[in-house]
Amino acid sequence: MATVHPEITDRIASFVLAQPVFFVGTAPLAADGHVNVSPKGMAGTFVVLDPHRFAYLDYTGSGAETAAHLRENGRVVVMFCAFDGPPNIVRFHGTGRYVEVGTHEFDELRPHFAKERELGQRGIVVVDVQRVSDSCGFSVPRMTFVDDRDVLDRAQERREPEYFDTYRRERNARSIDGLPAIGRHGPVDDAPASRPAES
Image 1 (cartoon, rainbow, N blue to C red):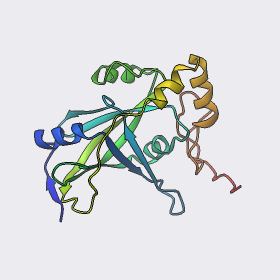
Image 2: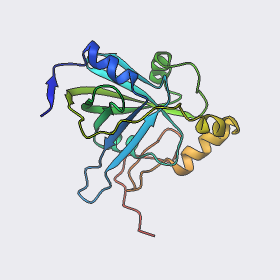
Image 3: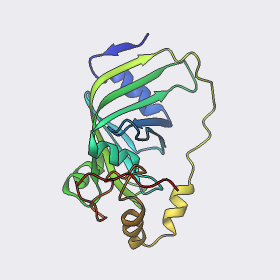
C-alpha cells in the first residue's frame, strides 16, 4: 500500500531529481478519448519549485497530448521509479498547466532549468501537487543507466529557428482527439473540437 505524504519532502525531492527518466500520465474528459503516457528524460529539465509544486521543460515533438489535456482539464500524474538501488516508486498527482515559450511566465521560469538545450523548447509544464505518495516498487526491474540520448539535441541543432514555429503550428496545434494543444503558435481557439475521423 502506498504511503501518502503531506508534501514533497527533501528526501522525496532528492529521490526524484536523481532519476534519469519519469512518466507523465494525462487523459481527456471524453470517455472515448485517448489516455496518454509520455516518458521524459534529459538532465536538468525537471525541477521541484517548492514542497507543493514542480515543473519540467517540454520540447517540440511529434505529439502534444499532455499540453492538450492540461488545457482541457489539468489532471496529471507523474511517476518516478527506482531502477537501481532500493526499490521505490513515487507519484505526484495534481493539477497542471502548460506555459508556452515566448510568454513572460516562461521567461520567468526558464532560469530554474539547465541553461543548455534551449533549441526546440516549446513550453514548461507546471504542476500544483495535491497528492504525494511512494510505494514499494518490488516488481520494477533493476537496470543500468548509461547516458542521456543526444539524438534530440543533434536533430534540433540542424534546424533553423522558423522550423519550430511551423512544426508546432502544423503538427502540435491539436491532440489526436482534436483538442486544442499548442495554441500560441497555431490557429487554435477554445471552441469544442470535433474528433478527427479514423484513417
